[in-house]
Every structure is written in structure tokens, then in C-alpha cells.
Image (tube, rainbow, N blue to C red; front, side, top):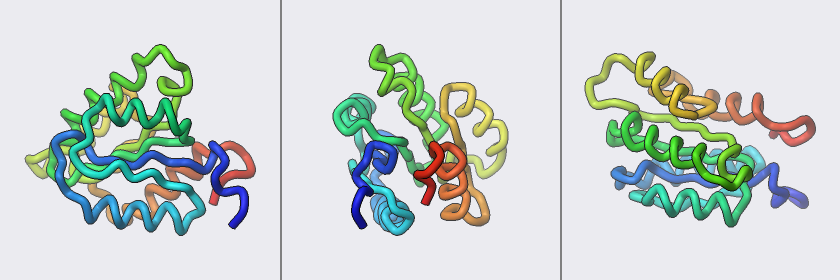
Length: 149
């Protein structure tokens, strides 16, 4: 498919810095690629500074953060605050999406989602019934005209 490498089709994918899970990233990468995105999968346990550097270099449409270990609300909030505080408008303004297991207590996802939104995430997907569909919808809603998959 020609033209998929345009900046509006690029996504940086990672876990939060404390999360060592990888199968979620493999699944998300395949899902996003099937939806027409070019994905740079940074892998698990990526320090915040490396995620920010990847955004600076790649200039993606979005950053998608996956959390399986339940620390998404802590590590994710710190990461998105660092993104939003960056002096580079291309970094500070990137679409930021987080999803997965946001906390370790199994309850209060609405509260954690509100905290993550307040910290700077554009979309918070928590443990939803259809995560693949929810992610596609979040990206499609944010995509400029003519680039939605």
C-alpha cells in the first residue's frame, strides 16, 4: 500500500516503563498495521525519555501506550506529563492514547481514566469489552480528514 508512511499514518507504540509484557504490543502492532498505520514498536520497559525521543525523531500521528501490569495510571501519567511539557510542539502536541490494565485493584477505572485524561492523554481505553474496536475508533476520531483507516 503506497503512501502509508506519511506522518499522519505513523504510530509509536510502547508499554509504560515498568511493564515487561510483549504479546500485547505484538497484537497492537498487527492490529494497527492492518488498519493502515506504520508502527514503530519500541517494546517493553521503555524509559519515558526514549519514548519522547522516538516521538521527536519519528514525528508520528499518535503515541499508543499499553499497560498490562496495572501501573498504567502511575507510569502513564508521568510519561504524558513529560510529553506535554516538552518544548517541541511536535512532541507536546502528539495524540496520546493509553489502554489496558490501568490499576491493580480491579475497580475505579473511571477514576483512573479521569486522572490520565487530566494528566494529558487524549484517549484512555482502560479494560474495555472490545479494545481493538475502541482503539480504532479513538484513532479514527482524532485523524485529520482523509487519513482514517
